[in-house]
Picture 1: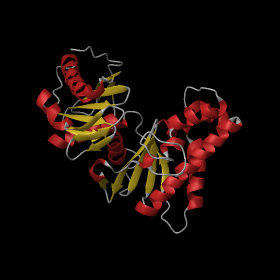
Picture 2: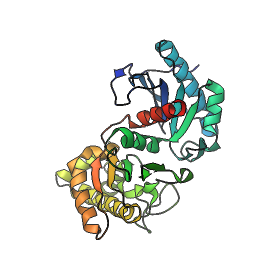
Picture 3: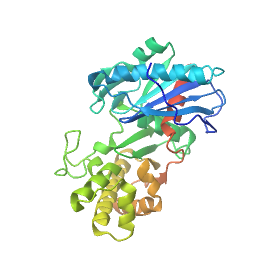
Picture 4: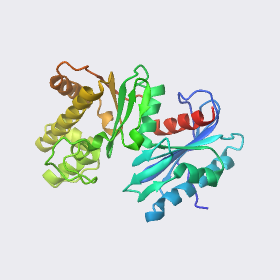
Length: 320
């Protein structure tokens, strides 16, 4: 069995509340996060391990990792007996069917993750999109809780959203919420998805860093460094940041016209820019709208473990 290294063995108080003990596993392109939640909602044994990338066998290696994590939690916390697992992954995910429809980065298509995981670990399992799960945590426990019609937008290396219409999640068979692949510049940069001018190529944290390097030849460690330079008056950083804000505002205005959400809740690394993001973004969105319902534009409140909480909520729903 591959060793599972706990980056922290913590006992954190989070707003999950009482319910069944469950495991949540959030698979990313680089790392996989996991935690055990006990009956009081405490998060135990939070871990971060490298995602087992294995070409076309990555999906099966991920399922084997879930088994390893389950055994590790059983050894570390023998008094906690999980009833279900909430497994999360990026890409196109059919939550209802429990199928990983497509992940080009992780090299799988049409993988029945729910069924295969249940067969291996003998626990009921939900399989969900990582951003939709994070959005559900915000919707049920966080900043989106007061609203029935709301979009939770996560801006990090990529951009994706979680849509709630009349209090219900809208998944579109796994295809809804790909806001990062809405077109903002039809003749713009080629996106990894194959289209040109996607929002993600202009306004994601990854795009902001990449574009600054393309313009200046200077490599920076993250979008925060670009924002710091923009704040200090660096012309290239300012141009890139303002173009990112314009593109985000356009996409939010389109969401307002089509879905009429009461609020747009923004999480992910870029949301940590605080007022440098939210103040000019609100101004731009207001300038684009006319008769439309004007959504509140708010920061997410749960933080970096929102995905794990969403996975835990879905696992609890399965056995509650």
